Every structure is written in C-alpha cells, then in structure tokens.
Amino acid sequence: QKAFASISSTFCFITTRKLNLHLSLYAIMTKLIPYRKSNKWGFSNSQKEIVIECNYDDIIIPFNGRNYDLALVQKNGKTCWVNNRGFEITPFADMTHQYTDKGISVIVLNKEIDSVLEYPNCLFVNKEGEILFDNDFLTSNGYQNGYCIAMNQDKKYGVIDYLGKIIRPFTETDYHKIWEKIGRPYHYDTRKEKMSPSELQKFTNDSRYIGFKNGQGDIVIQPKYYMTQDFTEGLCSVAIKEGEFFFINEKGEQVINKKYYFCNNFKDGIAKVVISRIDKNPHIHSRWGVDYYIPESAKWGYIDMDGNEYWEN
Image (cartoon, rainbow, N blue to C red; front, side):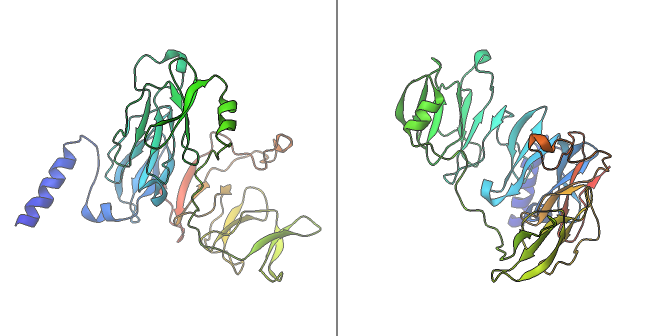
C-alpha cells in the first residue's frame, strides 16, 4: 500500500506540470526515440507509443548519455533541454551548448547583444537545469577544455573556469586574441565517443568506386558504391546511385530492406534518414564544397536497427 501510494503521488506530481504526456513506468524506463507527426516532433518508446507529445519543430540532439540522458529540442527557432519525463528543464534560448564532462551547459537567452535588457542573459546550468552561479555577461561560448570565454556589459572578453571564477580579466576587445592567450582550446568537447569499433576502412578504386578493406589490407567488400560513410555500430550507410541510400553490415549484406534519399549512420541504435523523394541533382552545389545537397524542405525521420520507422506523415 505504501509503495502504491508513493508511485501514485509521484505521477500526480507529474500530471500537474500541464504537459501533454502519456507516461507509464514502462515508457519512462524505455529508450526514447525521436518521433515525427507531420511536421512536429516528440518522442516515443520502441513500441511507437508516444511518451512526449509531438509539439516541437525539431530534435537537435536525441536522448543520450553524453548529455546526461537529456534531449535538445527546438521550437520557434529556440532550443531547450528536456528530460525523459518531458520536463523542459531550461528556458528556450537562442543558443544552448552541449554539456561538458563536468556536467555544465552554457545557455545564451538572447544572442543579439545590443538588445539585451535583462540579466542574466547567460545561464550556466547543471543536468537538473539548476543555475550554478550568478553572472551579468552579455554573451558566452561553451566550455573549451575547461575554459569559457565570456563578454561583459562593456563588451570586453574575459575567461572563467567551471566554478565561474575569473581566470583572465575582462580587458580584451578581440575574441581571437584572448582565445590565443588561453592556448586556442578546442571548440568542441574532447571526450571520446563510445562507438563500436570496426577494422574495415574505405578505399577507392581506379574508377572512383568505394569499397572496404580489413586491417590486413584484404578486400572484404568490393568497390561498387559511389558514396559511403564509415561503419558504426556494425552498420554503414552506402549508395550505389544518388538518392538511394541503404545500410550494409560488415559482410556487405543489405540489412534493412528499404532505401532513402540520404542516411546518417547509426548512433545509439537509431539513424536519421531523409524520407522525401527529391527530384533534384544532389550534387548541384558540389563546386561550393557541398558533397550531397539536401534541401531545407526535406522531411527527415528516425529508424532503428530493425528498420522500424518512427514517423507519421
């Protein structure tokens, strides 16, 4: 009885948040997959039961452990972090940086610094969305190897650490100069991705078709593809001709009996694919360095490794 009362009170608390969620204990414990209804995004479980309603314009980052089991969603051009119960734990903002290995996300509410009227405009939050320290910065970038460059209200740059302590005074008007002073740190998180390794490496034959060799240099998959990605999680996105991408395993066998206009590789068991049939040369912009053109109007969706599709048109 006590256990039942505890569970009931927890769910009563959740429903008072006025979020249109279909929550169940099973759904909460199941991996959540981006799900699209028409042009709106939410999340479902692997049985395609909607867990977080499709109210968002896009899913920027699906749920993953790298960002502490949070997802980054977008609405009206602004982004926020959502947890697996559907709670928006941070405000919608112009810029939301991924979490660091210290568990900090940097959020810039208004990126137009000349129109900032309220402070704080920059939030430094933990994985619960709690603000870690006060500040009056105009703007800031994300942490780079433990350093964060911020701009104060005098439009001068300085550097803070993970605790918000100033380690370079706010005296510089040139961003690149202060970036030089702290050793040109990486603009991205240097944590290693947890990916299933593959010894298969791409090679190109004289006809410019792509195949795969093993670590000893033996051809494992004959060169017959005009575009491929690398193997991740045992699978690889390939195409024999434009507009028809599909997935193969490390034996070169097609594993999902469907082709798409374009496929990203699998990550955490799901892959984002373009489901639109697009009547346009995908190499139309190749001279500008665009290898494969995907129009902004293209419809995307997610599939799992069994080929299940998580969308409704």
